[in-house]
Image (cartoon, rainbow over all chains, first blue to last red):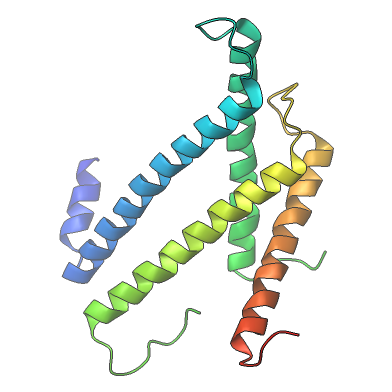
Length: 92
Length: 83
């Protein structure tokens, strides 16, 4: 956090500060949840043999692609979701 | 759901409502993301880019999920049991 942000925080009212704390907590909880979900999904889709103890090359590649793809997907959904929330969605 | 704050609520209650509202939005977004990923993205992960078919599927999926959300909201809110 830089100085200008701290200066900004000081001018906020008590409610705004509590609101900011609440949003921060939601974000932490949400990113942990997303992390767990992503691990579960990519593990499920990419790892299904247990002949070795460590991740095989193709499993690792699959996991990387899975994670990258999910994040890109999530960003796109986020964009569309924001449009819908603003009521700026075009019909079809 | 958002709108003019109802009279007679103090800041504490308003903050509580805002928090619930935000949690609801986050939950909706997460469920939508998971559903549309399951429906639109091939789980063989041949590449890390989303292809054109997947992209348009995602856009339509989000739009439809939104419509279903509104539709069911109306059914639940209309006060009569859904047929």
